[in-house]
Image 1 (spheres, one colour):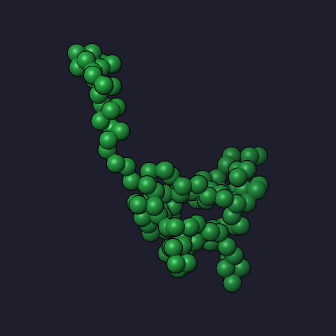
Image 2 (cartoon, one colour):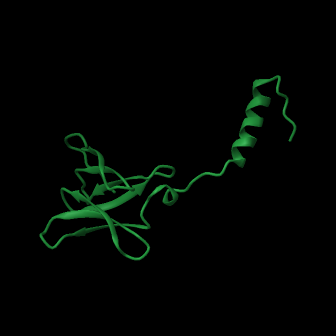
Image 3 (cartoon, rainbow, N blue to C red):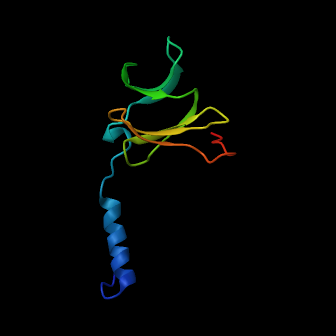
Length: 114
């Protein structure tokens, strides 16, 4: 592919071609666990667990109620877990440490629907 560096379009083509050659890390490469699983603890509380390939817990994120699902960021070791439908919470956390980065609550009259 030949790009004309005298035009903005040519420069962007060249930049795009170079970006395709740069390796990108996957979510798991950046510290994410192999699995995420929500469960009720023996004491009745709820948590989202980061689990490694051997089934060992890496971390547990405390949750206010039963969880529905989680979604992982495609390029950062972060994920969000949503409350079971009708969900009234979403917790953003770091998948390397399990540290809670933030909590979302929908406006009154609205819920998260997994």
